[in-house]
Length: 458
Image 1 (cartoon, rainbow, N blue to C red):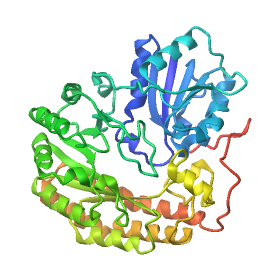
Image 2 (cartoon, one colour; image 1 turned 90 degrees about the horizontal axis):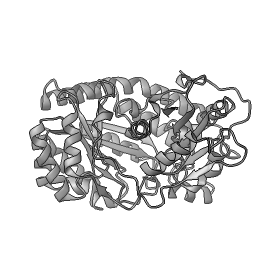
Image 3 (cartoon, helix red, strand yellow; image 1 turned 45 degrees about the vertical axis):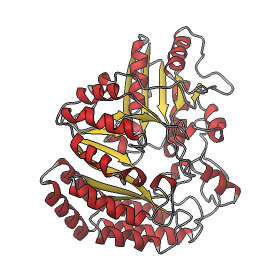
Image 4 (cartoon, rainbow, N blue to C red; image 1 turned 60 degrees about the horizontal axis):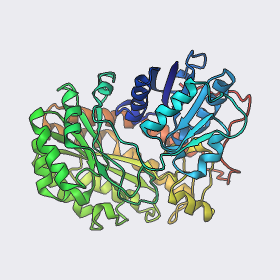
């Protein structure tokens, strides 16, 4: 039997660069069950509606939920078993809409459950397009684990993609705007398994450690960094200011080939546990000095529109980037995703002004901010985005990167991102301005209509 597994995107998606390993993992498990499996990251128009596959599965992000529902309706009419899963369904708020649009809805799933599901489908025990709500699968006992050997996955990825090597599961922090798998827990993979994966990646290809809080288990991180150092790979990773204040860890990172560190700063106006609840600005400045001294570059990611943020927050972000040695900055609009505590709080307070999931794409303001109006958030974000990626600023940051690391992959990456962001700034501005007035409370999530036409996007 055949199965196709999709991760869809509408705009530029980082999945094109750092491939979502979960869809290849599902493909690998399906192969092991004797299925012919294919996995793809693509746009809606690239989904094969006339496929000869028996099963079509989608990993769903919130912004792609409506288009997946439209595709699911057509595929089910063609007799395909449709499975929906992914972050959009990581909680009960979206279960009802999802179960009305597929045959199997997955909140979370482990290898055993996936193999059992495929066996049932092969045995004809699950009828495609059956009336009523879909079956719901939850990994209640949190059995999911990455296999010790993921080398087969890296061999099929594109040459220009970064190899994403998972180093842990879960997240110990409890941010209102986030809903990760195994929230409140943190379980590292074995050093031996990670080293085996890294060793299988060609030497010229960068490796990304898929772990938002790398270094949380200090002894594990130090042992891993020591073990991969002889492999001489270029490593990218993400961590928090609380972890990166440890100079011993920074020394080990530099020795292990870490060239790029991403920090989710979020806002200068908040004191988050993951940053040690200290001054975010001062901690970031210290990190820049320590990292650059060791030849590592720093990317800081900010979220605009948190409840702590007022109109002054945009100037604070720009001033920091303009006056500091920060190598790259990425800004996005706050998005209250369903199944997060933030969405529930805003819903109860009547602050959600757009319930269309396609608007949850960092290109629309879907809520009323606390310390400014939606219009102020739109205007401030547009102005800031244009300032950060002006030609003058881009040349400054690229020049600094070349001075630090020479003509390296990191410097070229900074140059490419700045060029792309120059174009993206205008696209985001048009999208935001098109929804700025009037802002009216919608009736609810946009659900699929039987027989509705698909709006193909290229």
